Length: 509
Image 1: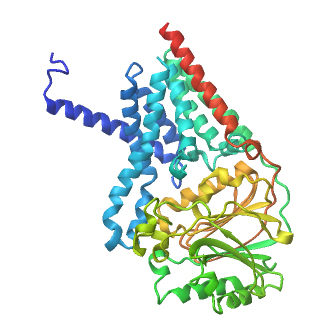
Image 2 (image 1 turned 60 degrees about the vertical axis):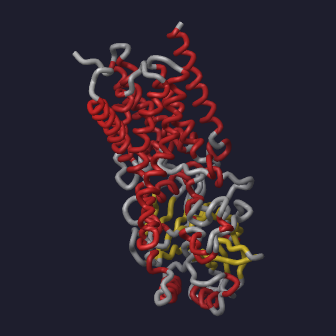
Image 3 (image 1 turned 180 degrees about the vertical axis):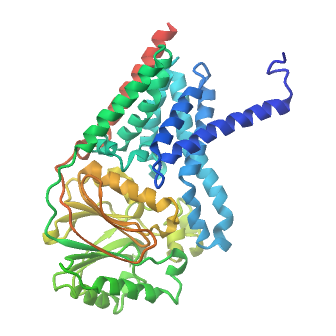
C-alpha cells in the first residue's frame, strides 16, 4: 500500500483541496447563524462537526491552518456584504470587490488561526478543545481592538433575537459566543469518556436553563411620556447625491417630518448625512427644517445627520436644532471607518477621489473628540452613535449614564441582503448590554425602536419610505456589563484557558 511519501503529487494536492473544502464548508455553515437567516441550530451543528474533525494529536501549526480554513469560510459567508460599496459606482470600483472580500475573510480568519495555534500549543488531548473555545472568544474580543477594531460577525451574534441574548446583560457578546461553543463542545468532550449521550444532554440542559432565564427576564418600566418620530427617506446610495435627486430627497424628509400625527412627536430624527449641504452653508435649509418641525409645536426638536466644516477639517456629525433654526448641540463621529471615511496613513497624500467611499469629495473626515451626551430636556440625555460606532460596546460605557441611545446610519452602503440586518442585530445587542433603549434611524432601513431588553418595539422595513412614531422607552437599572464591561468575561476565559493548559500538562506527565 503506497505511503503518503510515495503518492503522486497530484494525489496529495487532491487531498489538500478536499481538506480545505471540508473545513471551509464547515465555516460557511457556521455563518448561517448570522442575520438575516438566524439559523443558530445549523451553526451549532457545524461548530460541533468542526470540533469533531480536528485531529487532537496534530501539531499547533496544523491546528492553526485548519482553523484558518474554517475561519475563511465563515467570514467569507458572513461578510460578503463588504462588496456592496464597490458596486455603488461599479465602473470605477467594481474590480476591487473580490479582492476586498478575499482579504477581509482571510484577514479575519487569522484570529481563528491564532486561537487554534494557541490551544494546540498550550494543551493536549481533549483539553485542547476547551482551550480552543476560550481562545476563540478571547481573540474575538481582541478583534474589536486591533487596527481600530472590527467586532462584526462574532459567533455569539447568531443568538441575537433568542432568549439567550439576555445573557449579554451580564457578559456582553463574548458570553454568547462562549455558550454557543460550549454547547457544540460538550458532546465531543464526552466521547472520550464513552458518554456521548450524556454530553449531548449536558449541552441541552445548559442551553435550556439559560434559555428559560432569558425568557423570564421580561419586566420593563413604563414608557416615557414623550413621542419620537424616526424618518426613513429611502434614498438609494447610487442616487442620493445625483444633482437631479438631491433636493427631491430633501423635500421628502421635510414632508415626512411635517406629516401630522396624534400625539405629536416631541423629537424628530433623520438619518446619517441626511441633508444635501454643509452645516455652515445651509442657506434656507435650516429654516425649512425648522418649519417642518414646528408643524408639531414650538418645542419640537429635530436631530439630523449632516456634514460640517471647521478649521479646514470635515466632520460626519449629528446636529440638534429647535424650531427657531438654532443649532443647540453637535456630536462629531469619532470612530471613523477605515477606507470608508478616511484612508489610514496615506490619506492626506491622495487626490480627493480616493479619500474613502463615504467622503470622496471631502478628502476624508476628521474624528471628533469622543463620546458625548446630548441633553434633550424632558426627553432626557441621549448617547449619540453614528453608523458603525454601534458595533463597539466600549463606546457606550460613558462616565455619566444616558437615558437612551440614538444611532443614525446610512445602511444603503451595505446592500439589501445581509449587511443592514446584521447591523440592526448588533444594535439590539447594545441595548441588552447596557439596559438602555436604542432608537435607530436608517436612510434605507431598517429603522427601529428597541427597548432595554433588545426587543423590536416598532420597525420600518428595509427599502420602505416613511416615518415611524413611537413612545420613548424607559431604561432598566445599569447591568453588570454596563458597570464592568468585558473584564469579568476576560477573567473567566483566561481561567478556562489556563485550566485546559494545566490539564493538558497533567495528561502529558
